[in-house]
Length: 286
Image (cartoon, rainbow, N blue to C red):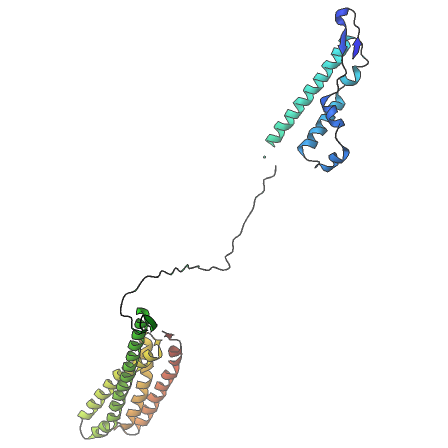
């Protein structure tokens, strides 16, 4: 403890050397610990700021050389003014930092859809089925059996087989009927020179053969599982019908002209048959 004498006993003042709390704190900090902290951490920033402020204060160093109370008080007042100034600067810095929101960074995102997949969740719910269930049993033990699902599948197969057989039979029936009608036309045409009504009969036979040929073609497409639109079916029928008309025109009693007419009809029908092949190949199969 140091004693300073003033002009009177009242002015005597005792100043005790009390180490600063901050100084004592820093004196126990190891160098290796300081180096281990991040330079931007709050604790390092706090210590750096305190050290910088203490370097500007003159009271701790001048207090030992001042013997008068007035001089000591003046040094104290000067340091208080310095502290107030630094305090104001710090608050001004904080306010300025608050008013300064930095660089505005924007982002543009372009979305490009390269692939889209539809996910379908399938749930299977089992429920009991009741019906006739034939089985081969040995006492209380069932060796083999068929449930309603298997029975339905077998019945469907039988129905499909029956339907297929019916379509196959109808295909040959309609095709045979069209062929018979075409075979009857030549003798009728050759007899048309003696009876004028034979030409009308030949035309009727030809007109009846075309629908039968169409029905035969429909049964054939059904057996192959090929689905075509109506106009494509008619296009397929037109080619063979025109070829048949060209062949039948050879029996018309019109002299040498029938050869040119027959050749023209046969070539036209053959071209239509050839051009209708892509329509048959592009048909959807069921």
